[in-house]
Image (spheres, each protein chain N blue to C red):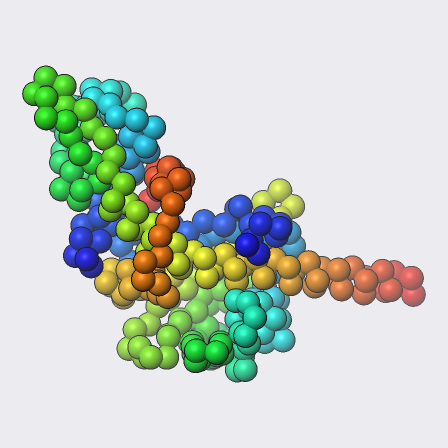
Length: 118
Length: 169
C-alpha cells in the first residue's frame, strides 16, 4: 500500500497533472479537450496522462479513435484518507486557537480600555 | 462537529508543496502579535495546542523562546502521552519563527517548521511548513492517527481534486 501511495503522491506532485485531474473531476473528456487549456503539445499532455494512468488516477477508454479519459477515484480516495486524519487533528487545534485568540483579544481590549480611562 | 461554528474554519488548508513538505495555512481573527503570543507563551499554548476534545490536556509545556532555546510539549489523553520537543532556530517577530520538531518516539527524525504570519484584510494568515527528512517520513506523518476503515465520502473527492489543482507547487 505504501508503494502505491508513493506512486500516487509523485503523480500528483505536478501542477499540470493536478489541473488535468481537476478538469476530469467534472466529467470525462478526450486528450485534445484536455490539452486545450495548456500551452503544451499533444505528446506532452499524453506523457502526463501516462503518468496519471500508471498511478491508477485515470482510466482511458478502449476505443482507438477517441480514448476518453476519466478520473479513477480509488487512489485519490486513499490519499485523501491519509491526509484527512492529519487535517482533522490540525483543524481542531486551529479552531481551538481561534477561539482562544478571541478570548485574548477581548482581554486585551478590556485592558486597553482601562488604560485609556486613566 | 466543532469546526462548523468557529470563525475562519473554512480557510484551513493542508497541502503537500513538495515530496518532503506539509504546509498548513489558516486565517485568524486576531492581530499578528496576539497570534504569536498564543503560539509561543506556555500559558497560552496549554489552552489550545493539546485541546483535541474531552480527556486531553497538556501537563508539560516548556518554552525557552530565544534562538537556540528549547521547547517541549506533552499532550496527554486517556490512551497515553504524545511528547514533542525541539529548538528555536530563527525568531523574527512578528513575521516568522523557525524551529525544529521531534516526536519523542522517533528522536532521530527531525523536522524543521517555518511559521510565517502575514496580514490579510485585517486578519492574520498563519502559514506553517514542516519539512521532513524524507518523503517516507512525510507520508508517515500524514497517516498519523489513521483509523482502520475510516471511510471518506466520495462527495469530498471533487473538493480534494480541486484543492490539489489550485495548490501552487
